[in-house]
Image (cartoon, rainbow, N blue to C red):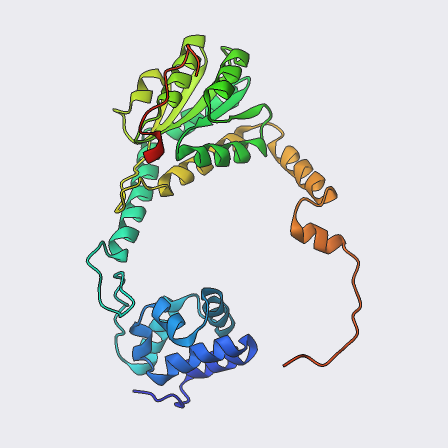
Length: 322
């Protein structure tokens, strides 16, 4: 086993990178070198705690040393030492380092990967994503709605669609905003509604009213048995199983992003609209990096560095729990 001062090629790369990363990088390398290569069988978080460094310090160190990530570093070190380094145990731990009696991190990661892969494979196989994107493009006006935890999903989709399509409206949660939207809606419009357990009565009411109007309803939900499916013309069923009591957002956000991307790909003038929006954002200095680029350089002296409405059902009593 190498010592802290063993001049192995991997440690040499790390030490060279640490010299450019500052004290945090040097502390990280010291922790790794103290028990190299066995130290790389520890979880990254354990290395960070032992060195007092941050995640970004580790990322910077690895990048400057030419490693893609800690898995890549572990493989290289294993080949160098002619031994197989065991991947770290990804169980949650207590402060004292003993395993807690709760779901392991590995199980959680596997579940999220399964949710995403299963959902995307299913939606690609049954054509639901393409049909939903076509419906969004064909709509005269696009309305997006989500309640409870789905408020965030709806906002993300509305933001993505707005960059490439006109007439996209995010309906704010609440009966008043829903009534206004339904009053302004047209039979040739389309509603995209997010509905997950516990199902919001407000979402179901909005979907029913759009259906009654003759508008197209697209439902992003967790099951074909979901109550919103009865009002939907297109259903995107998404796996939301989770190791926690709350439903998983991983596949939900991915499907929303892909749906917006497909709609943008089929929208005439989407690229031109997106470029125009980017130009306007720069002109208005909407982003911090734009403002920094426009700001004049400031010359500083060099000094020594110091050491309810009737047409809608009443709100779901479980709204606060989702």
